[in-house]
Image (cartoon, rainbow, N blue to C red; front, side, top):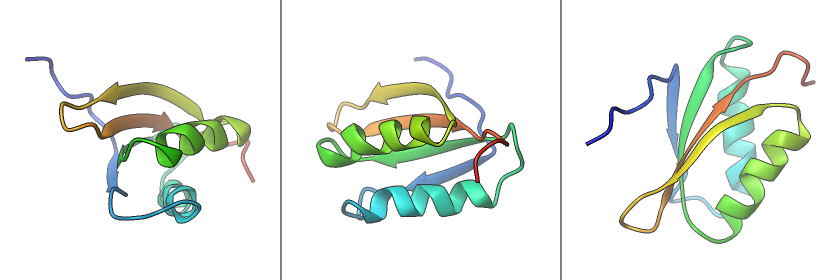
Length: 84
């Protein structure tokens, strides 16, 4: 069994639908300092397609995306200070 990546904050958005998924992630990132990391648990489909792309569009760094056995995903993102 692999070690989980140590992150500064966690967010579960499996109960949220697009486009609110990215809004929730963006709000959670606002609470972090530049360079800190956020682990996001999200669903397959629109969330996993749109959230990583939107994060990259805002210059955040997606460190990893891992699919779980239940079909959901764990995404780890590092906050970039250049974002507005």
